[in-house]
Length: 107
Image (cartoon, rainbow, N blue to C red; front, side, top):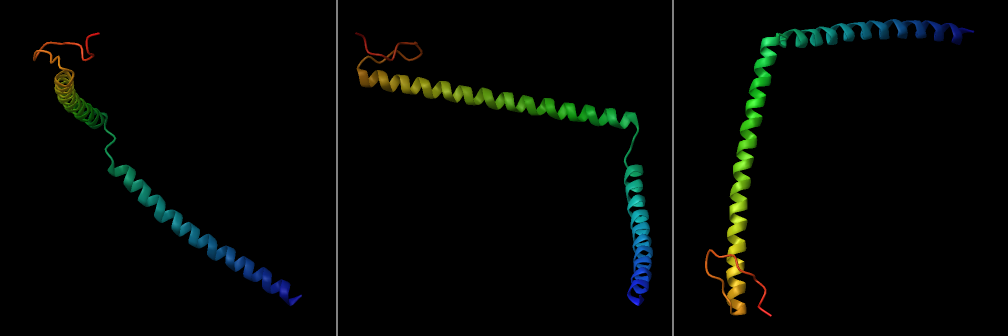
């Protein structure tokens, strides 16, 4: 019977200590969370300004991407023209520069 009485006392002491530790930990974490929420501006004007800045950055990024794409297209067109001229020289019927001729030999 002494084992049961010791077990019950230890169980109650463990529950009390665990409850105390949990309460302290919960209070500390809830204060940190509350401070983090209070430090963030919740004003709608601030939110609108942030959204406006984000949309401006997105528009600038799209413009940079568009210009980069145009440069790549120009490079590809130049490479295609160079290959067309080389193939024309190989086949013996080089098209005039600037003209769009067929790359296939005449049949």
